[in-house]
Length: 162
Ligand SMILES: Cc1cc2nc3c(=O)[nH]c(=O)nc-3n(C[C@H](O)[C@H](O)[C@H](O)COP(=O)(O)O)c2cc1C
Image (cartoon, rainbow, N blue to C red):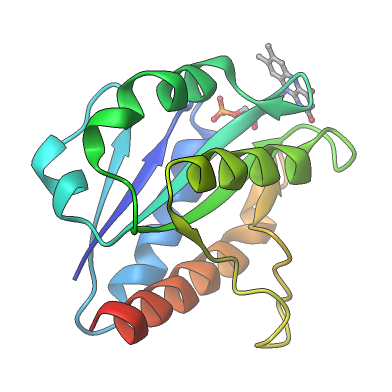
């Protein structure tokens, strides 16, 4: 079962956290994952993916412009409708807009007809409300949460499409 992690990253933090999610996905038997930056994708892999998780640095308390542009233009060609979507973000501040960014990515995914999943509070700790957010500089503290998010996400994708 193919899963895509797609990110934009200027200074590497969002990329790093996307890779932590991918580690969690890989730990689930039957799940395969590839991680791409927005401008270097394997188009066939995305098309064949049952799920796409997108990650952004927070810019101006929102997803970065490149990601918003992706939704407005490039995203159309990947036949996203019906795939499961998830979102994560990295920011400088806990009050900097991480949740808003995640929420807005999920909203854009819904416009394409994607089904969105967060894990929510159903599994207990770590509780992930909308999607994981890491704070640059102390982002290592969130490795485990991002790992677990990936694992939960992959299990849900297999449950729905397996
Ligand atoms: C143009 C710009 C705007 C930013 N705006 C915010 C913001 O509103 N809130 C915040 O917490 N961090 C903000 N940041 C910080 C980044 O979100 C943060 O450093 C992020 O982890 C960088 O991700 P990257 O290493 O993947 O590029 C901004 C950074 C830039 C360059």
